[in-house]
Amino acid sequence: MSDTLLAILHMCIFPGGAFALLVAMFFKGLDRRVEARLQRRVGPPLIQPWLDIAKLLTKETLIPKTAVRSVFLMAPVFGFTGMAVCAAFIPIPGVFNGLFNMGDLLVIFYLLPIPAMAIMLGGSASSSPYGAVGFSREMMLMLAYETPLLMILLAVAMLTGKILTGGATGAEFSLLKIVAMQQQVGSFGFNPVMIPAFLAYLIFLPGTMGVVPFDIPEAETELIEGPLLEYGGPLLAMFQITSALKTFVVLGLGVALFFPGTISDIWLVNLVWFLLKCLALMLVSLTLVKSATGRFRIDQAFRFYITVPTALALCSLILVWVM
Image (cartoon, rainbow, N blue to C red; front, top):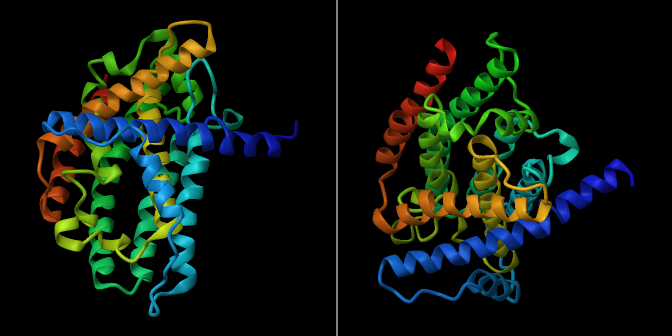
């Protein structure tokens, strides 16, 4: 099988594409169900995300007369493609090592903002004033949460490089080597030096996923969905699918960075173990946070991200440097 065909299969079927979408849609349904229970509501069925997508696919695609048509149509495709590629780079310990064993933290760092950029492009091309306000909020929020993420990735890469080289200064950005090294010496999530970075990653997750309290760019009560206001039908469905794929990517990346251990030599057992860890990460960092907090203002969210998670990530980075 040619490398090109293999790459397409990984992006379309496993671990990206169909597999990532199935897992992420189940997680989203469970997230809504658990959130409802925590708020003493019955909540929707687990298949509600699928029902939402199916309903949108039956709707007509409407484009505002004053919109930039080409950008308006291509924005959701751009976001979906970026996440489909990114999902194929996420290693599943004991099952899959990433596309061509090439998973690299810097590549993933550049791919992760693509859905936010797609939302900004779509909002700015829609000619809606709500889209313009949502664009500016999305841009500010992205600049705020990308800073601690970069420090987290640098801390993980530097600690891996020091361990692999016996204490010499350096950094290892290969996710495959990061996962393999932790399987030998222990997970970074239990390393005192990396605990601040792990906490910073937990705080990063709701911001990058745009959920409460960081759903400011799409605040329904303020901006009526902001950049997505003019979207409907299959185009809006594609944005929702992109969000689901991003859920799989950020949760899988968190597991690979901090808890990549395996419990068996059987790939199916390791796959289930990986998914359980992703689920636990989602319930702690997304579901509980959404259930217990209200929406921040954009200035509050910006200050929060450039102080709390940035300070935590910087703490781990300094500890790795001086240890």
